[in-house]
Length: 156
Image (cartoon, rainbow, N blue to C red; front, side, top):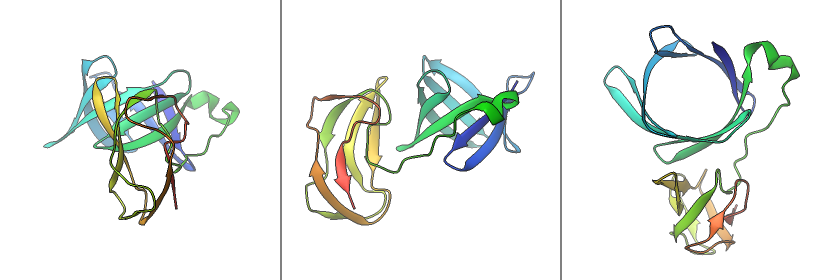
């Protein structure tokens, strides 16, 4: 079964092979479920724990603290699927609980710095600075339940 996966303007075809391996744009991965929504993905000696949430044609994927929102469509439906754009806004990527706010308002940070820690599906999810910049207003606090797309903080 082949599926088209989009993140912004980037599109890749993903297919599950008969032997259970997954082919992603020419690379072969072994995917093993750990528990619902959590997978161990390996390629050679490299290994990742991947969290997946969402329904329909949209999935939120977390790998090593990096989050992506993907648009999935059956390859045959590619032309009929509504295009979504990836957002670099600092919003909740999936339903989660805010565990702690790491950044302080009006503080300069480097790309990759952890700004907010969320918990979703029994895993911690770090929201990181997409580039060097400054933290603006913070719109959440520890213990808040946040929904996908809900603003966590302003970042410029």
